[in-house]
Each structure stands twice: as C-alpha cells, then as structure tokens.
Image (cartoon, rainbow, N blue to C red):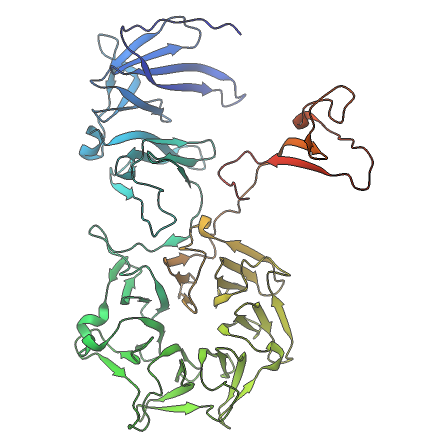
Length: 582
C-alpha cells in the first residue's frame, strides 16, 4: 500500500478531529462518493474528496474542532472547543467558497463550550422517509438529548443509586455504532452503552425540581383504583399517579391525616374495594381507609388491648378483597382478620389452627371460588375454612416462607416460596409442579411477587430478575436490568395489573410499568470467533504438519492426537461489546 503525504491548506495547525462520509448506491451498495473531513486546532474545517489530491478549506471557526458527524440530509455537524455546535450545509457556499451554518433549534446550550461530542439518531418510517430525529450531546454535565422537531431537551446524569444512569456526568466523547448503540466515554474512565432501538421497560422517575415523580425510590406496594389512578407505597409514604396526565402527587397522606405526626410513613400494602375506597396497610402504624384526600377523609384503624373488635396488630403484611367485596388483612405476628362493614370492627380467624399458621402471615389471597388462601412466614400455604374457623395446611407444597400467590385462567394457584422457586398448585387434584433454577430458566429461587397478566402468562419478580412464564407450557423468558428493570431485586407483593393490562413491579430502586404486548427485543448474540487453542497447557501455533496448519479462525477442522487424558482448551469471544455477558 502506497502512502502519499498531503499538505494542509492552512499553516501552523494540527488535526484534532476527523470524519469520513460516503454515499452508497441503494441498489447495489456501491460507493457513489466519499469525502474525508478534518478539523484543526485553529478551527479550520478541511475536506478531501475521493480521487482528489489536494485538501480544501471549507469553513473556519474561532476555536478548535473537537468532533464531527453527519445526518441523512448530508449536513455536517461540527462541535468546537469554545464556540458550541454548528450545522453546515455542504450544498450551499458563499462567494468565498465557504459553507454557511444552518440556523438551529435548541437554545443557548448549542452556543457554549459545554458540548464535547455529538451523535445523531434518525428514525425512518416504512417507506424510508425521515420520521424523527434526536441529537445526543456529550457534555460536562451529563448526556443531553435534543428533539430535532421541537428543540426540547432531556438530560441524563449520573445517579449513584441508579445502575441505569450514565457512569459519570463529565462526558468528553460519544459514538453511535451500526447497531444504533450509543457508546459514552467518561473523563474519569470507563464506558456506558445505551441501545437506541430497544423497547425498554418504562420506569417512573424520581421527583425533581424539573418534573414530578416518585417521592422515594424504594417501592413496597402498588394498586390501581376504580378511577384508574395508581397508588404507590414507598419508604416515605404514599404517592398518587394519574396515568392520563402523567402527574404525581407525593406524600398524599400528610395533609389528610389528622395524626400524621404519629404516622411513620412506610406503606406495606394497598387495595381498593367496590365502594371507591382505598385501603392502605402500613408496616407499623395500622390500617388506613381513604375515602378522599381532604382533611378528615381518611380513617385510621389501630390495635387495642382493651377495645373489642379492634385491629389485632399494627404491622400489616397484606390486604385483599374477596369475591363478596369483604376486606381481609394479613398481619405480622397476629394472624389474619376480616373487616365487618356494619360494625366497623375486625374478626380474627384461625387462632386455634396451631403450628404457627395463625401468626406470621405474609400474604392473603381470594380465588375465583371465594376461597381464602394464606401464605405464612415459614409454614407454607394454608386454606382458611371460614365456617369452622380453621386454617388447613396445603401439604403438597410443604413448609417454607410463602411470599406471593396468584391464580391463572384455569384456576391453578401460582405460589412463590423463598428458596424454592415458583410452584403451580391445582386445588382440585392437589398436584404441584415446581419451577426452580434446577429445572428451568427462572432467574432466582426467591420469588417475591406474582401477577397474572391476563394473556395466559404469569409474571414473577424474584431477587435476581423478572420471569414471564406461559401458564400452560411453562415456557419462560427472563428480563434483567439490561431490559430497563429498576433492579434485579423485587420487593414482596409490590406488583399489580392495571385495567389496561399493563403490569407494575416495584423494588428498591423504583417502579416499572410493563406492557406485555411490547417487550424488549430478545438479545441476539454474534457468532463466536475462535481466538486460540491450547494443548496440554501450551498454546498451539500454526505450523506445517502441526495440529493447526492455518490460523484458528480460518481452520475448518481440528485434528487432535488421541489420548484418554488429553487436555485442550479453546478460547473464543463474541465480537459485540453491546452484549458482553451473553
């Protein structure tokens, strides 16, 4: 290969940025033209056309050019060190043969030294026409995205408690690869990546000065009421989200509770009844009934040793409404009870069942037949015989800590037991089928939350990810943080199904909104490339007549010497850093 030196058309300058543009024939893929662009430390923009032997100065800025890219219209985007971002139309020149900048939306940020790099995301419709454009900018204050149509900005900054945020906020470089993955480099070291084409699970933001959001990132309960509003129990109280407007109300109990100074805020369970009311169980402060958020619109029920019919205990684990619209309460240490509307009192059940079944109850569930099932803190699952006031143990499931119960369309119960995965129990036959890490793909054996999505699928949140399970054939698909989950860890029973079929799953780092009909695309892995071969601990190199006569990556057949105790190792890699752990 012959290398021909070419002189720069400007003196006393050095190249600080380079970019290659080409246009291909849509029919045969051949290159129609190619152009190389160079930016200098003095702000000169220089081009070299395909086949030309001389460089031509096309534009000049007042400071060094640090980054360049182009869009589908053939315009060149130039980032300078001190003067911001410029968009240059190659087709238009002034009388001096210099390109003229195009007027940009986006405000003052594009005119400052804050921007260090740019990547352009253009989406086409089915006919190949430009549908939308977003501009991604690397800045000293995080990653920023500008909508090409409206000029509106969205910021992405480092959050030490959010594993899905950029690794740091000082970003000097950004690059978009052929798979539409953004690669973001940081001044402090390290790289983050973000797929532009992936259907990520939606995740609720935290409240900030700029937008409404969750009052706290730790989510312990969630439910949708009869009006379509979503109630969210956090480590710092109760939030209310309106899906139609997207607006959040934080700490809604603070203004409505008369004794709010005695309320320690952590919500453990939420359920709505047929009267338009919302019931809220707390970890230490009893039970709340919300009829309105106005002053006096909330009644609080607490335990009492002297008052007959009082709530048995203030530590509420779970709530459910049965087929008759009756509220059932599971407590931590005081068993289960039922609320009587007429007397506004509580009746405790199962006190004589023994074996601990009547004390620590994690979850309570009413099936389509009206039967009440309870999940205990260590003695497995039981069924409440209301007529005889007795809890009967479900022997086929054995003992263990039951965290969640759900029912599928066939009447089977799906039960999550700590350390044992998820079991499908048939109440009619007593048969049990268990899926665990030993015999399935579920990500973890500690199943914490289960919901029936209504499309013959069961969703299970574990301490190691989220699983979608076909209720009939048991096929599974697994999701993790790389799909947009708030984390791989989910809190017990912090899950619900909305009236429109969307799923809500909460954990220590937020709340996900999941559309079962629009899931993240399965991650495709590149074909592995063989990198090396070792034989008896020694690297094998190509040699005539040897085990390898050609480099390993172009070898079709490997013939190894015979030997019962022969030891060999093949090294391989998938050359796709977008999915390095796959």
